[in-house]
Length: 148
Image 1 (cartoon, helix red, strand yellow):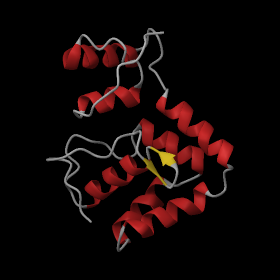
Image 2 (cartoon, helix red, strand yellow; image 1 turned 180 degrees about the vertical axis):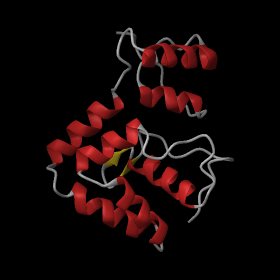
Image 3 (tube, one colour; image 1 turned 90 degrees about the horizontal axis):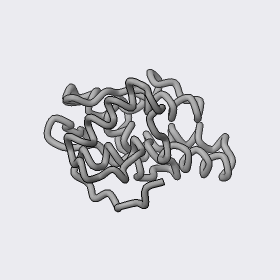
Image 4 (cartoon, one colour; image 1 turned 120 degrees about the vertical axis):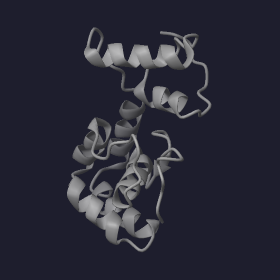
């Protein structure tokens, strides 16, 4: 059940686990942290925090569950206890907003975003969301989008 993020990537933000985006990626980072091989990744990063806050999950309790779980189904069951408190519409809204999140114009975050995107592929000016940027950085196929 160990995941080595020094040699591989966590799941995409866009992957759904228990019906929620980002959860699989957060699980992967928690597993890697628990086993001492998280590499350059950060557990409880700002994106993880948004997920935890939205579903009322304590990041330390989540990490403890990851450390003691016999398999992924135990981790997903723990997360589902919190996710089940939300309606299908609330979950769909969270998912849609999360994958469409962009850096704030004029912010340090935007400068970082643009620098990273341009260093990866300057032609991909259609990539404007954090989810797509992470996929590009991790060598996943990112569909070309029409610029807004």
